Image (tube, rainbow, N blue to C red; front, side):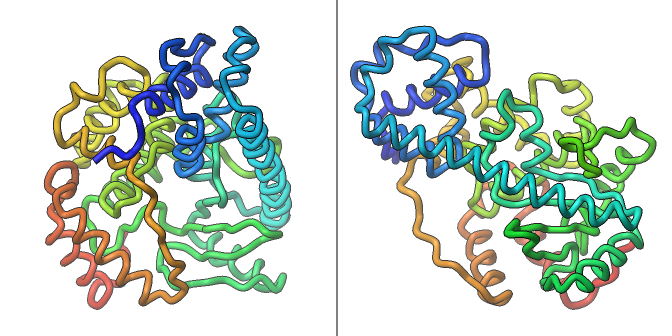
Length: 358
């Protein structure tokens, strides 16, 4: 059941479109009825408040009368969120630059993954919310990087086989030796090989003048699709994922992406995320979506769940297990395998198939 008014829903999508496109006109009819508290709250809950504020700022510059439609205290609150996001981005960038310098001093290359690589495709990258940094370090360099960090007194969390987690100058970092959770999963093992092939002999570009490598667009697009599908199946898909796809799909080779998604079993999820992006871009109405698609879109506007922090590995595994059970239907509708097969392969890998053979 949708908990947000249709007017607030339309306004948020209108602001997102304005932020990402050249058009700076928002729906005058919606302006008269919108609950701005709802708009700000839902944007904040999904990590897109700064992006929506960019849309509002652009619209106000073209149409100054829009400014009078929003209560001043709310406008100041919203502006403050955008300023904070910019400040957080700069702080995290400084830490990332320092980490990049440390690794480069030892001839170690690291590829930026996920959120930060996606942000490069936004009109204002610093307004794409991300609270951490994901890196991929290949082969023996991963162990070397771990040793270097430990000699600097940095505590590494090694609970997950595919990565280490640590705090570097206040920035939460996940440093991957495997890009995806490959263990016990034949589909993701093939996908991992494909992603690694994209990092071979491609024209290297570097992130924000550092020695951190930016991956090619196709790498970012395909990893986004796989990772977002995982987030859907674990109950973590948000509007930010949909906005990311609105941005990323503008420059993709559509036939190639569709072919690859079919090859790896992501094709049904691609159809879903495309449909949701079409709603945001006002290409279709939400009411015209297939029932399963509309169910996903409407879930974005349910009251946010209060999630207690789970510090232990066991507690997080138990929580993940119940998230998977709750989303069994999504495995059937959008996944590349059934929920039962996924759980069985995960348990098998944990106890019996610990060695990854790439």
